Image 1 (cartoon, helix red, strand yellow):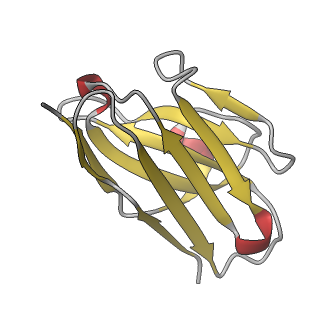
Image 2 (cartoon, rainbow, N blue to C red):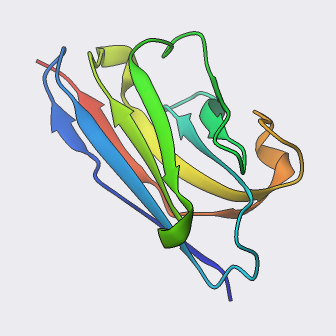
Length: 123
């Protein structure tokens, strides 16, 4: 049974940093397409950063230059380093695994999801 578990969310002031982690367990393959998505109240879930099995990344325009996604294939772990956080980054952040297509921002392309972790940016 595949399980996806995020951690690292919290509350920070504007300009602060957070690092999210996502561990995928029970996945039968050594590598797959993974990504970070977020959903703010009243909004649709949107792609933030996705990464393919070779480490290529794609970022939403709103986070380029501030967020960095990385992975440790040996640990089946995905990370999201978030710097220069803004109030508009406030959302529940979800980790997605087993994407059908490389670097997709379509949530329906991913088969496994974590429960989400809250990120709040406020002064």
